[in-house]
Each structure stands twice: as C-alpha cells, then as structure tokens.
Amino acid sequence: MRHILIIGIGAGNPEHITIQAINALNRADVLFIPTKGATKTELAEVRREICARYLTRSNSRTVEFAVPVRSTEGRSYIESVDDWHASIAATYEALLKDELADGQTGAFLVWGDPMLYDSTIRIVERVKAQGRITFDFDVIPGITSLQALCASHRIPLNLVGKPVEITTGRRLAESFPHKSETAVVMLDGEQAFRKIEDPDAEIYWGAYLGTPDEIVISGRLAEVKDEVLKAREAARERMGWIMDIYLLRKGADFDE
Ligand SMILES: C[S@@+](CC[C@H](N)C(=O)[O-])C[C@H]1O[C@@H](n2cnc3c(N)ncnc32)[C@H](O)[C@@H]1O
Image (cartoon, rainbow, N blue to C red; front, top):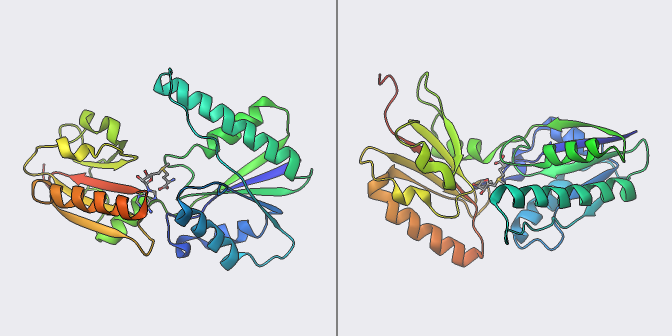
C-alpha cells in the first residue's frame, strides 16, 4: 500500500512550518510540488525554499507538476469546479501510479492549511474512491493566511464569546454586517468590501502575508477603503499578481 501525507506548509513565511510538518517532509520518499509553469513564481520559490531548508534525508525525490486550470466557459460555478477537481484527480492519480512505488510515501505540500479553502483533501478522497490505486493518507496542519493576518495586525480573531464567519468576496454581502459581527474574506477578486457602507465597520487587510512583500492596512472602513484599493492595485501591478485576505468587524468585546 502507498501512503500519502498532505502537509500544510504555512502561508508564505518558510518559518511558519511546524516541526510535525518538517518530520513529515522527511518521511516522504517523493515530494509532489505544484510549481510547474507557476505564474506566481514567488509562491513556487517558497515551496522550493522549504524543501531546501528542512529536508535532511538525501534519498527523497521532488516531482514538480502543473495544476490543471479551471475552465468556466459555458458552465455553472459548481459544474466548473467539479470538472476542475476531476482533472486534478486524474493528475494526482497519474502521479501516484507513475512516481510512487507500492510501500512508498508521497507528500503533497499545501499552501497554508489543507482544511481552509483548499481541495487537496477532497481530491485525494476522490482518487481513493475511484479505487484504482490503494493508499491511505494523513493530514498535517499548517499556519493559515487567516492566522498570519491576525498575527500581523496583532488582533484576536473573534470578539469575546462571539462567532466568526469565513467567506468569499462573492458571498460577503449575505453576511456582513447584518449576520456576522466578524467576517473574514478570502479569494476576493472583486474587492467586495467596497460595497459595505456601514459607518462603524472596521477592516484589517493584508497582502502577501508572511513574505518580504507583506502589506497591511487597518482602520475604519469608510476612512481607509480608498487607501486599501490603491495599495492593492499598485501592488498587483508591481508584482503581476496578488493574494490578499481581510477581516471586517463591527462592534466591540462585551457588546450585547
Ligand atoms: C485557495 S485559498 C488557500 C488558503 C490556504 N489554504 C490557507 O490556509 O490560508 C487562497 C486564498 O488564501 C488567502 N491567502 C493565502 N495566502 C495568503 C497570504 N500569504 N497573504 C494574503 N492572503 C493569503 C487569499 O485570500 C487567497 O485568495
């Protein structure tokens, strides 16, 4: 039987990685890294640096692979994600079959933590369910971009005794501020915070967290909205890509 390790590598700083993750990296005979043809070369570099810094065994191999791109043409969002997962599953299956011998251990290096807005676990489950290759798998947690955001702003995630919603830009309007006093927004290509008009809302925004290019801005949303939009656009132009996350908050600890 083959063994798979799904390892969270943190959200940009090679020092985010845990000792459990370093030990897991060193248990793997083959490390699968989604860096081939990567447009965000800085992210590929973080993965390579992690391997260079922490791998102590000399007899493991690294296999770089390209992640299939999602096609949205003529399909609903759900259909396009399902098709996309099917093609990633085919890529994973081929990697396991061609690159990993029976009895060997393979590792997938996952950005942040594998449980947060990442489909590696569900795709590995999909390959397993297809039943053509027998393997078991374990998940090793990592530091998420959400933790990196709160740490950089030096804030707790939740208000005392209050819930938190984690959502996407597409769905933010459904929740904040009327349903959730704290909303964390990831994967936001439309800067959904622009449409929030509440005068009491505050924003804690961060881009390229954990990397040398990290930018953070916080304040009353109405006052810093334009500053965030400008900083975001300038950074996107300079770097050619952007990865950002933000927390919106209304209210205070001990408010009823
Ligand atoms: C596909 S999700 C992966 C999340 C990842 N599994 C985690 O634990 O953070 C990608 C989104 O995570 C956020 N993200 C990940 N790393 C980030 C970073 N270093 N700085 C800012 N946002 C980041 C952004 O919202 C980005 O659109």
